[in-house]
Figure 1 (cartoon, rainbow, N blue to C red):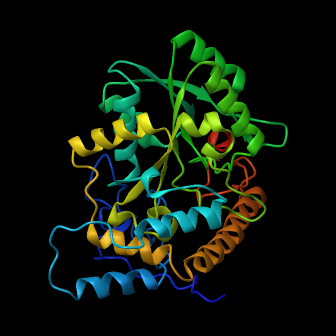
Figure 2: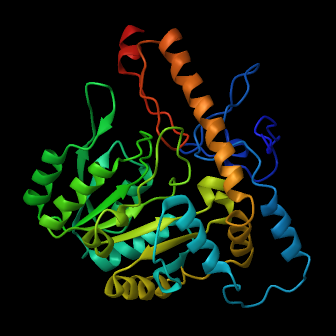
Figure 3: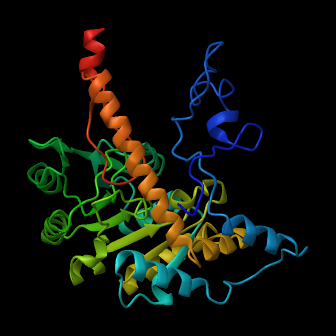
Length: 348
């Protein structure tokens, strides 16, 4: 491999929530490990790999100029996003006007919710789900209708379209949040699944907030399908959210972007984000994205995904051999492992 995915840096004292908060944030962070045990920071969804080297180089180069005043998007910023989406996801006809900035994906989710929902409305989500969705909905005055994912005969997590339709009909739902790829189950939804889902949403006039922050972390044998790509109708009823933060281990830089083709929804989301100033770009985050989506960034991501494929396969095999009571499906994307420990706990 060209890049190093074996050296793990010592993150202690370097602003790492996963390490430095242990034992210091009761009710949020885990306790410190007992004497003689090491802390394995699996409770926060970031990586211990160092980031793509060109990113800190770009940040240092910009920081070497001692002025950080107001600014606009650098020349080439939007072209980098357009080029990345075309090369990685096969996205065609993406234009600068379709792309908006947010200081984090959840902030973009909130802006879209405020456009697509009224306070007190019910939003459809799947379960298990990223915990941030439930909290964000509750904190902003929305209710959740939860449709559980189900495992098929091969142990693959699937959407229960019958249950989802029943909840849409019964609760008069017109907004849904989709996680694609799925956190925490690691599903990379197939095209037929997304097509069927979006046809269901067309039937009930449901608008979709599609969190695609994990779209670059796709394990061997799978391919990410952008939700907006499955049909023209899907493109017009979906606000998709992306970021470099998961892919390149940059969560501390808190930057993301949306892709919205529907001009009416796009204009309203832009206005909503501007009201809270959550659309104010950070200059260092901008240069980080341009480096990530620039020369050799895709090579680094490909090597990352190969490494994660090997690591997740090892973990799943290890559990099957040494803790068969713990059920775990092989992830197709993300670096998450969703463990069903019910039988293991019963055996103890």
